Image (tube, rainbow, N blue to C red):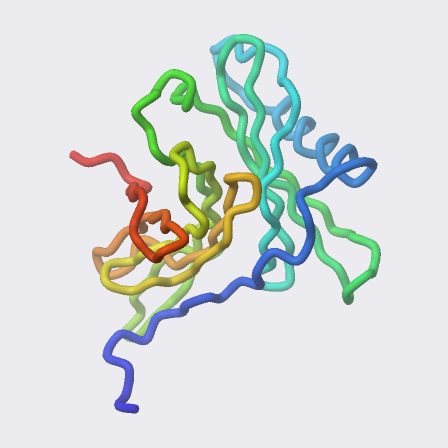
Length: 203
């Protein structure tokens, strides 16, 4: 094969390795996520968080990320992730870190949405000639039926994919690189595109 004219990282995270958190493990993760939510500083009265919704885990750079979201009693959405390290498969998780943010743009208030997306920068990447991009953790819910796999697209390049688990998915991808920005696409069982949405609002 000839040299790649666009040498960028693709499929850099491990696929989901576990089922969605439940039981005591879910409780332990929720405690850390909700603690991060409690540290948010805002003039808004966010209200009390509800039940935490978990998304598929992805492991990148030696850390496993488990995204989460919850709707508050005042109609806001709290979103973020809990990350941790494991020395080897089956080892006890350690080095926990939790991140949280909030938004008033919710799926409930936008019935026309096909995808409900959240994202966070977790690292950066340097390419040829010092070009820089972000490594983004992206998680979401398919709000339309018939989707089975979500992909991340950076310009003409597919950079990651994740099979849906209870209509939820998590992606890890290079973003904001050489003028290209991430778009998430949802695909059906027959390989047809079901929905697409950019992480960035159109000007």
